[in-house]
Length: 156
Image: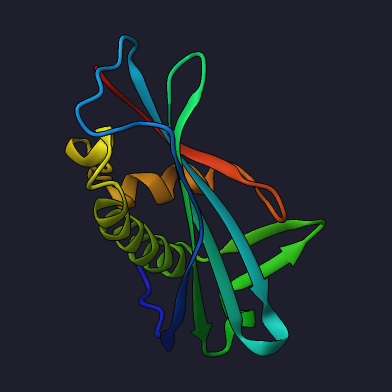
């Protein structure tokens, strides 16, 4: 496997939205599912790529908690590792694993702080094998401008 040298810099992290319908100590009667969402927004001309990652904790009947953040990265010579074609974004797996790993780790930490006083304070975002996740993403097209659900998990 050839190694790819990349220059990557995290420019900023923004909280986009947070909604939680639960309260600390509240009991839920249904299984809770966790869905992670991803939206990749590249600006190849500026060597900027934004990842919006979100999490939805939900039952079969309603969304209980939703949280979204945006991580903005600068990638040197981005045109060599990112391609946009027909409203689809293709990202080299080596770059995607770094961007997704940083973004999910950030989401996990921020979610722990935000949900400390909620039912989900005791149910952090599950640990995710980024290598397997990236492999599954490479088999599917990630559409630009729409959320792509890329991971589902169930708490029982």
